[in-house]
Amino acid sequence: MIDFRYHLVSLISVFLALAVGIALGAGPLKETIGDTLTGQVEQLRTEKDELRGELDRTSGELQEARGFIDASGQRLLAGSLSGRRVAVLALGAVDESVRTAVDERLTQSGAEVTAHATLTDAWYDPDVRSFRNQLAGLLAENLDPAPAADATLDERLAQTLVQGLAGADPAAPDALSADAQNILAILTGGDNPLVSLQEDVTTGADALVVLAVPVSESAQEEAATPSPEAGASVLDAQLAVLSAAQQLSEGAVLADGPRVEGSLVQAVLGDDALAGALTTVSDVQLASAQITVPLALAARIGDVNGHYGSGDGETLVPDAVELTPVDRTPVVVEEQDDTSGDEGDAPDPDSTTGTQG
Image (cartoon, rainbow, N blue to C red; front, side):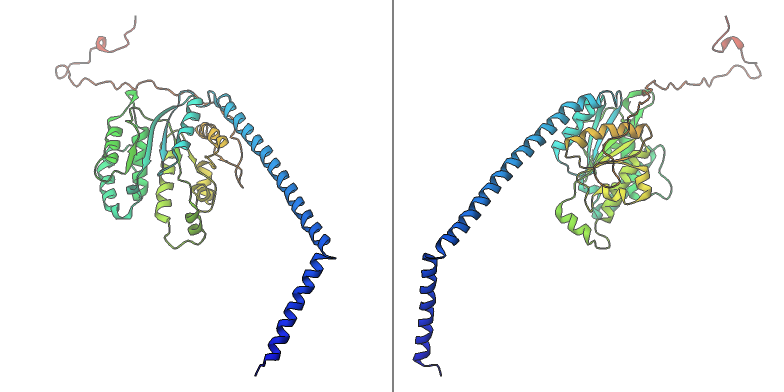
């Protein structure tokens, strides 16, 4: 059993240690400890000031670089898409500032933006798949060319939408064809519209810019450890739209956000067949990439495929191309005269066109 003397000795030891510490701190070690702490504080203050100065210089240089890129954009883009009509198709909700910036760069390149379309949640929702299937069947008669017999629902819908956005009337190239008007009316109507339009579409597009939805941090984590069906249906639907945009127009470009795990650009570059057929631009939230989008689209129309950005397998600047002007001459369909002369009469040579003088 511990007695009173044990406690007394313990208390005395504690007080002796405290007294020794006070004596040393106030005596021989006072200046050493004080000088050491003062030196460390001064060093940290100096480092802080240096880092702040470096940050200010870097911020200033970055601001100057952004200003230069922005100011030089119009000169770099001038005439690259002159006379082309471009539809901007978002695969979901995207940052409006990015969409506006892409519009501005397309305009600087000489292009006319003919449509702003956005896929709604109903385009991907598995609960309305049967509804989408009915729409695809309803719209089949408006399609030319028709989808392949073995095309998936995603592929049929994607080809339908692209033909709606790019369906110029051959007889009146500045107007949208009746079939294209019907397609867009059905896709944007009803209680579950598959597509939303910012404005009425009045003319067909020659090419398309497809805006991807940047991947969130939570989606990146899911992509790192995917479940068997995680995001597979959405990815397939997005790739079908991108492929249809390329196949059924003069050319298409995918403009995506940061190239991270789970991003659409990463999916394209991870598949050799897709990478060889589709053009991509990553980091479209940056001014430099926004300028790259029209240049990449011009290259794609000129049969030059590429992937543009700062990551592996990407290049910074597309090759320069000179595009052939678009021929918008109306296609005149001559009506044939079904009337004929008396039976057995020979054709009258004077009634034919192009008589010789």
